[in-house]
Length: 312
Length: 238
Ligand SMILES: Nc1ncnc2c1ncn2[C@@H]1O[C@H](COP(=O)(O)OP(=O)(O)OP(=O)(O)O)[C@@H](O)[C@H]1O
Ligand SMILES: [Mg+2]
Image (cartoon, rainbow over all chains, first blue to last red; front, side):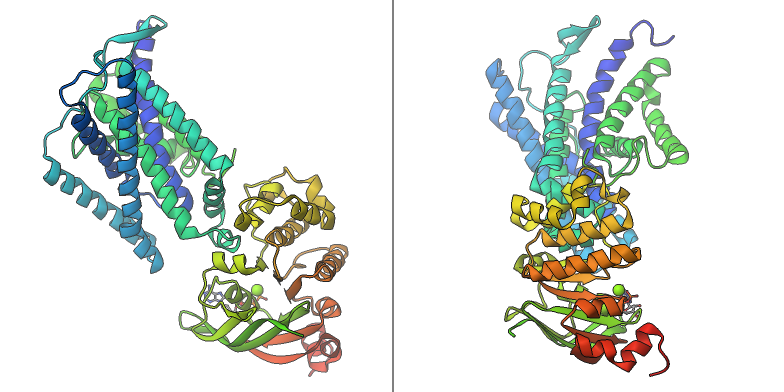
């Protein structure tokens, strides 16, 4: 009943959030696939993408008010900057926080502690260097974010949501092709299914693991930029809640399962926002984590199941 | 006979446990060499050390005159050492064709003539090429494991118990195919429990016992050696 009057009005923002969750969730799931490890510092990869996008666009745009094709250009530049920022930080994390432990055959718990330590380090480093206040990104378009660009079922879709959807769909399709059609994808799937045997086939396991972190970082970093572009802005703590929710989404879809992460992200975004309509906005985070607990209790392998390195 | 692969006094440990205590083995170009031994003797450890999955703490391994014992596995396969591991280790969620393509990973993509060769040796794999590796029967998985190792165009092929768990008819077929692969020019190091059949296709053989080589001879001599017969055929005491 709570949804009958304005279903699409809640669905569209939920879907947009869902795309962001999906992009971040892929970072968790890809790394889990090759290492059977949750990279809890991934929320800081996301945050790094936000700051990279912020600095790049604020420097390039300054006080201008771009329009038309130059708006498109700035969105692309912002995404690339965010992706590169996320990719670099993810790569450094792998080299500094994980690889040394792998070389020493450390127990799983050591990886978890290292992840949390790295996460705290990056969080506080960003807070110290970039300030504790949240900062808006210079808008690449003059049209205000909330103005409807076009309508779906009577609901206006803002430019901001449209940008998120377009960027996310492009990145999801590219990732799907990367995993299924390229040599790197072949290596990622082989390492996920049987790392020792992948080595026997000529796969350089360490290299594939590093590249997997980078790919996850590119997606998460771009998501950080897109998130910061919106009303949430960019701050050193911005990764915490979206990171946990994307982790929930990855578990919901089936951790290690690439299409599961996409599906889980979209579902979580939508469910979460529809629940806002039915309960109250202040319950939104509670709903997400209730879903996490429920999935873990009822179907711990997630909707599509925990299938590492599945091609299709 | 030119020596293709040479292990010289190789010692390997798992933590404090010594698994190989000074193994010296020579494999000539074009040979089939059988490596026999009881459970836990160190056969698998020997193969894993050759292919770079384990590294000796003493001793050396030479392949085509080049020292290889420090190299990681992914570089060793690039030199021309193919390994069909114990337990087959098929990628379960890749199709038969994708598994074969993994074998050719070092070339970037599988070559058509290599695929044709594998499908000629194992017509069953051609029939099943789109099926997931994990759903193949044990015998089919074994064929796939051998075929996958061949896709890297190895100079020497390491086979770890290729007949394990197969019906007698299929065992015979697998040994015939190993002989055929060898006749096509690939050197083979064959680890087997099935001693009689392994020795009947091999040129030479080694017997491992708790990490040490205790016998090495022509296959035909080992086949009639009373100690080998006692150990593997239960024929009286040695
Ligand atoms: N990962 C490991 N950690 C500790 N010990 C190991 C490990 N792998 C093998 N070993 C030990 O090393 C010895 C040799 O093992 P290996 O697997 O090489 O034997 P094998 O000759 O292949 O036996 P089988 O015929 O049963 O396959 C055994 O005593 C085994 O218990
Ligand atoms: Mg063995």
